[in-house]
Length: 326
Ligand code: ADP
Ligand code: MG
Image 1 (cartoon, helix red, strand yellow):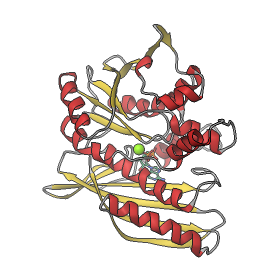
Image 2: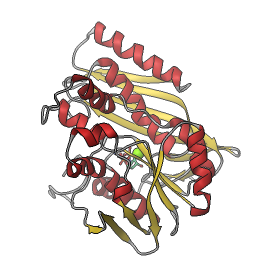
Image 3: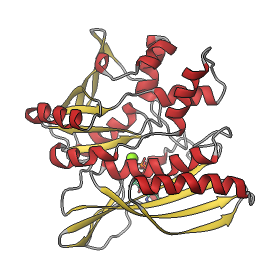
């Protein structure tokens, strides 16, 4: 491990931290969207932490309100992916300077978002550092044993995703000045998809009732599906023509680029889950009931590996999603 510059973030976690000894009330430790702790005989706590760092997780153009929104959304998304309900948060804030206007804008949006999800901010820490960084820890709760993990996908399950994929990827390219669109309103749409992801908190109850496995798509569909397959020790067969891509993205870039963003770009914070095929129509009507798009994109197979077809041709995925160390 030492000196290996190609060590991925996931290898690093496995090597140095995954062996941590845990008490018997820790139902699930390192390796999922969140940990599960048995709080009492009726209730499990679901705990997640995510850090956002200036220049890594958001570009300089992100406003204080954008940053507040995203800090909460990425954590709510992890709790939703476990099919739990967010309850309590702590916030560790490292600021390069004291800027009251920034803090006012940040805290206003933070409180709005906390209220929206009925989350109590119960503590945190404030320090000065060279780079703006925010770490939010979020505790959610779920009825005992009802959390949905990455490791329980079953052969024959439908693989489904909420919303559309790839918009945030183009948003990042626009924010970084790597490309431009003629139309300001369209540009603003993609930037909003990057800066203001909508955590799918209201899908948690449906996952709780129907899903075998779930993950949120933070590092790219292809990579995050890979985590489910690895942990569940199974494979997948995908029909890439079915991947939900917004009309805005289809109109903004070539079909090839749109597919690339949908497969490999991070930051969408949609949910990817698997559910038994016999429940698929019930799942669809539940999602229709909350007004959230859901799309079947493939099926879980007993044979390991990821097989995909596109335009009737076999498709070999070539890139990974986002990794902090590769
Ligand atoms: P996500 O993308 O869903 O937020 P990550 O990929 O960041 O999840 O993390 C994968 C798993 O590794 C999670 O269970 C997380 O809690 C754990 N993890 C990450 N970094 C550390 C660390 N430094 N110490 C202990 N566990 C960690
Ligand atoms: Mg996650």
